[in-house]
Amino acid sequence: MTVIRMDHVGIVVEDLAAAIAFFVELGLELEGRATVEGAWVDQIVGLEGVKSDIAMLRTPDGHGRVELSTFERPVAAGPAPWAPANVPGIPRLTFFVDSVDGAVDRLRPHGAEIEGQVAQYEDRYRYCYVRGPAGVIIGLCEELR
Image (cartoon, rainbow, N blue to C red; front, side, top):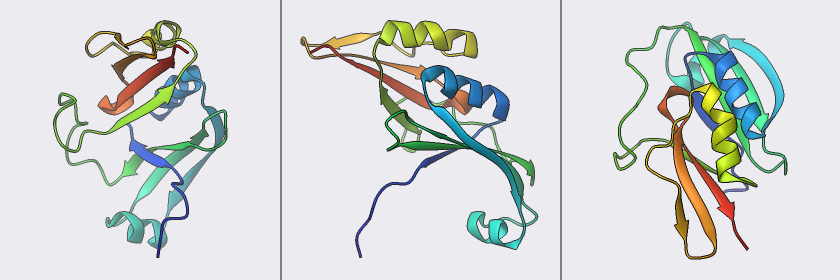
């Protein structure tokens, strides 16, 4: 058996509306929202009595998707991961953007701050990390050629 395709990346957030606004500002398109609950959801996530609001967003090219979810129940057992980028298991998503500076400027009102600095690799790329919803590290990469 082999992988056919990667369907989406899922991120649990505390504030679904704010997370949607963040990713829409980045350039993703909202496909839809739903509330899910019942035995099938409990089976998937391995918890009982799950009720979750979800939103699915897609990249403009239609190939990548991000699922954002928040749980009404059960209540989360711990806080979001705000560890440094080198800690194993810290989620990181990277998007190519038309302008790193422009993307950072648009995302700042949504809580994004640069983790380090905008760096340039030779004459090929400008790249930086910002923190997105729930502490997820968002890589912003601009192709210079």
